[in-house]
Image (cartoon, rainbow over all chains, first blue to last red; front, side):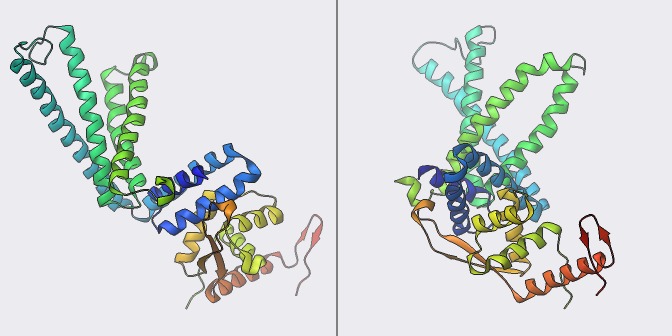
Length: 210
Length: 112
């Protein structure tokens, strides 16, 4: 019955009501899955979670938008701070080990420096996503998913027009495909890290822990 | 106190709960709607409607009867409140009034 445990936990992220309700919906889906199969179970879970998250948003759209703006700012600030910590930490370690600054952000002309920048920014983003999850679990309990999706939506409201402007609007599709792929992957992986942050604060039901 | 207005799906859900009497929970409500209307409601739509009806005070729910096929999870049983009964009666009466004297293919409604 592990999938029902997982369903209960996922539903509890979008429900604006009690854990009991998440459990009863997960139980209903598990009961019907015996008739309709696993595919039906997971697609129903996704659609039900979406409906409940949407309802959580429409119940208090201004409050949730405010929280999403705050969440986006928190993630941006965390990313910048962590990025600074990581790159200066990198330089400090290189200097202490007597390796100079080759390959760090101070070594602007080298290829390894660019790679280090990218790796460090990815790590900073993932850590910031984790901290965002912890913040969401504390500030928007049982509405985490609705707020996270709103953050994602606000970010893309800014990012997509920016991308179109930067490519001049011409030959948009081929030009943006790599960026869109990176965006999909980073949204998915960042989302997983956010979920881990939520999980850290809000323990899953005991059945899922076992 | 005025009778709250009901959407079409809210009426269907309330009528299904009434038909099921004390056996109304997510799974049975969904299958009753499918049996009577031929429409299979999406689980998400059903649960958000049930929550909305409960917030309006038209239905009440309680948890009971955990079973092994549900992974030991309780069923959330629904009953229609007096307010809900009044609202659905009002909606059905309005509907019948609209149908009075109409002749539809295969159906005839006499004037009462």
